[in-house]
Image (cartoon, rainbow, N blue to C red; front, side, top):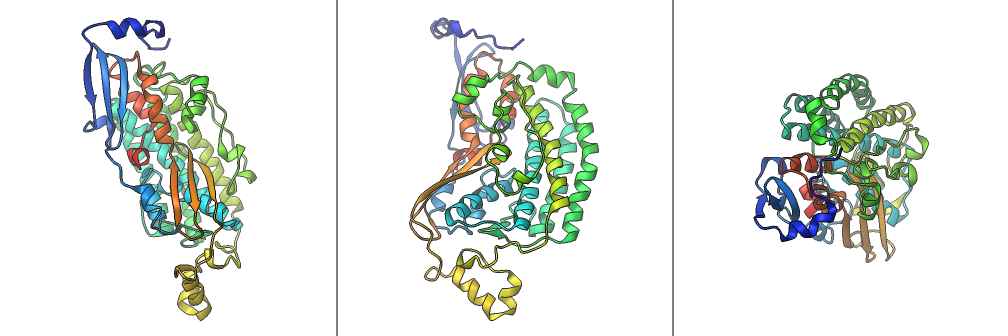
Length: 407
């Protein structure tokens, strides 16, 4: 039975009731993790209304897109959803490549797909582990952190950086990966299921966790659609929408995987979807490892829009000239003067970039469609009628990242 103590028909009655009080939840609160603030209207411990107050982590990310070129800006998108930085990079350069009319090489497509799914696992692990921690369970968080460290090691081996990798480039990747790296990923997907099984037993079969999340923060299918929810939040409410299947990009059209959905629409369903999506991500990575082809990571003859291999730059005059042609502002290619919106299925949902081009390799306008902003707008309707202690569970199930929210 849904735990909603506020009947929708009694809104007027509660609005007239005296004795309501206001409480600031955050921005300095352990359960908000970063800088989220909620202004709550309470009747005792029951939440009558909630007003999200954003902007505490505004960093001017979109404005920076106007002064940095398409490759330089990758260091900024890294810091939006900093839980899965590579997923942001892939989404940004997916938009750039669509604007420039570039087609990735098969090897680059498969490598980016592997990295995108590693980021999905990485993001979901922290989302589940952090919420369990906020609800009082400590042990499962250590399981999540241990596996995330292994993904950090994989990122470091590929790019030289563990966290903000800045690994993608227009039309390719910063470096190609070695066979040892592929073996490293293969070892991860071989041993990780054992940990996932233990984690699933500690979380999804934990009676306390189930009672704290089932029936709490219910989002119906109709509300999810009308509110613009995407990703695990929407799929937990029965919306079978996944861009990897519905509008495939990278290598997803060649792969076999299931779209995980639930019908409960509550906090438990959202966590359940994330845990099952981790299993599907492992299936995708395994298929990619079996099929990843040899060959270049930049399209042959792609011209000034793609950077040459570093070895060519250091060892041949042709590579050096190619590098200068791509870097020097007066010699760069001229993209079409048009606007474009492109998107990918990030761990939190649809992550899109709207680019207005003025004919240079810098965006005249770069706007981000971030899932955190959409989902945080849904928070008030999810929490009305719940108890004060339910805020932690609902916030954790939405996985709001403040840097992506404020931009």
